[in-house]
Amino acid sequence: GALAVHSTDGGRTWSDQQVPGIVALLFGVSFSSAADGRAVGVEPDATGLPAGAVLATSDGGATWSMEPVPSGSLVLTGISQAPGSSPDAYAVGVGAGGEGAAGVIYAHAPGGWTAEPAPGDDLGLVGVAAAGTGAYAVGLGLAPGPVPQVGGDVAARSAPGAAWTTVLRAVPPAAVRGYWEAARDGGVFSFGQAGFYGSAAGRALAAPVEGL
Image 1 (cartoon, rainbow, N blue to C red):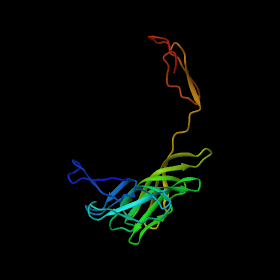
Image 2: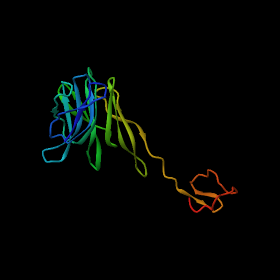
Image 3: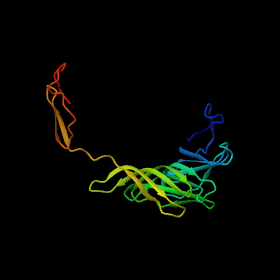
Image 4: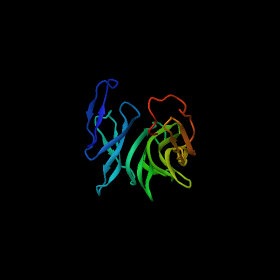
């Protein structure tokens, strides 16, 4: 089952704290004060399938209780609290989309947790941070194009009620269509899109080059 640990001396020593036994794993925690905090993770739903879970404490973690969240998440991995704001907390994770994984965003207000639409190209979110009246979430997204690529993703909202949009996407560099060959005397030859960065031809070698 899940485990929470607690320190009262700046991390020099840690002690276990009991969490509800139904929770399988915990991935994130956020405290708005020394007493009030939340943790997120995964629990089995009524059918035994994984579902996102939120735990809350009001006594510094001495006791934890489950908070009901909307259905649709497979796991919640990030949590951020924003005391004095509305929403006053955000949780993010991964859910099942139409064609695979999808990002999940939950917002908390006095009435409880509600689901908010994540950008449609999000494949999953792993972290979130409240910032003033807005918030940022990070995860994986699918960059459109002739050959869609998966890359790092940053989603944001500017104010409560505003739509979440993708504000930054970092995709891996395109594959280089080329290759290099080496000669026994140290010469290097580039072909196609492979760049030429120099050669050892004409230098005294301890032994002939056998591969590259």
